[in-house]
Length: 152
Image 1 (tube, one colour):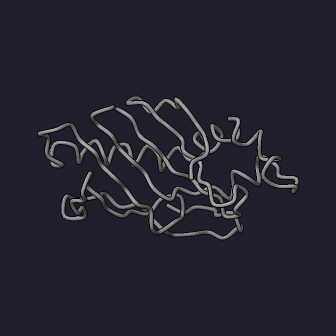
Image 2 (tube, one colour):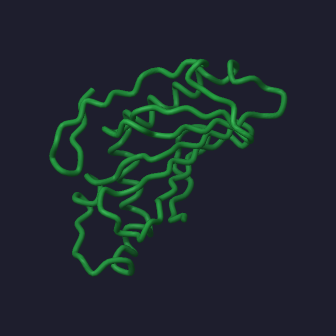
């Protein structure tokens, strides 16, 4: 897969299927790194219901990662359709088109909570329009966008 990045470059950072061996156990979740949307280092967090093992959820993690990777256009449009983009004038005096804004968006980290049946996609911009804040896009268990806002 090739991705056009915000600067017009073509990137060859390809997301690979994550294996159990790619994860380390953190204090509250399992963590790994993957590539997505042309960025090589995307942090992945997986939180599971008490008593479950990561091996029970690894297939679902990879299925959702693939969906997110393949649906960049849908997800970045959800961001520009939200209040995050409509309020950008409060953060910058620049004139920013939706197309230019979407082209600079990238995933910095992903949080999967299988206990709560939700995914949080943390998105940042090549240009820091929001003074260090990231965009948090919430998905339900069927990958439907349920919220979008700034965090940080």
